Image 1 (cartoon, rainbow, N blue to C red):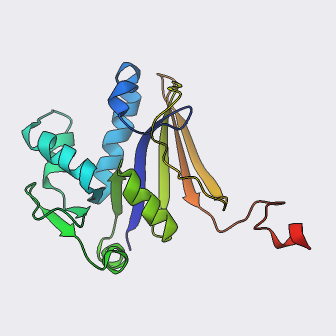
Image 2 (cartoon, rainbow, N blue to C red; image 1 turned 180 degrees about the vertical axis):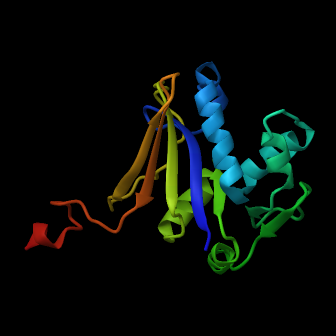
Length: 195
């Protein structure tokens, strides 16, 4: 059974959009190796339309000795979109209807990781529908002060369980979490807090 795994670049203050603004000066050999291992472990990509279109415009023209481009271009890709008519990047399937059912079925059909890069809107939807299995937050030692955040504002707190931490030479930290059904002690959602 496959797992849906998010890998996303974020700043220390939680900004996830336009990672090219804050990532390049922090590239290190150990972080590149971890990124390559993560990609190699994946059996498929799952992307939102905006991220997909950006990747589809760039990756087919890329080459590298490490194998990033070959893996990205050849692996199965699934894009969730109600507006995309057709997918031009090879090995891509568009998911436009019965999204929850299709993704649940995909998790059964794929043995390894189904990797998501970026795709904030899709990730929020997956979290709301309990379909995201793991979050890998790659945090850069930068504070931007404004921009798109991964988690949407909500009256209901979400508890994550930390399952791993890796620090890179550049000061970047990879924190791996799984969603938890636990509730915050003392929160409005905690029945003991209202008793």
